Image (cartoon, rainbow, N blue to C red; front, top):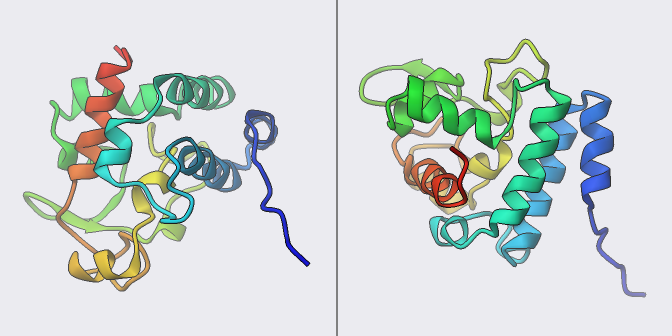
Length: 173
């Protein structure tokens, strides 16, 4: 018997966001992003996928996150922090939204995803985040992590820079 993969929708995302189920909404956001870039088989987003990401999808996702969090979360919030507070520095942004645990210069070790604060008490701009955390185990190991995504790893903020550039090109000003 063949199983059919669930197709997630913006309505699913909206429902979770309206219920303040931030972690579940982040997972659905990630699944929508992977589907929009045809990266389902890979299971993670690379810089090339981000560079080609459909602007309409980014805007649809962002609109929901910013609305249901009253401007606390969303891609536009992350981009605003990146431009104005982090001075266009991906590592500074990761510290601002508290994605890093150890704040050494010029970088820090990224927190494990499950250690993020899944509430409105989280730092402004902390979500969506799973798109950044998901990595194949071997890339995680190469970054000093434990094969479980970015958690415990350091360095590579290229994906974050790629997303901020994509947001600019998609007119998140």
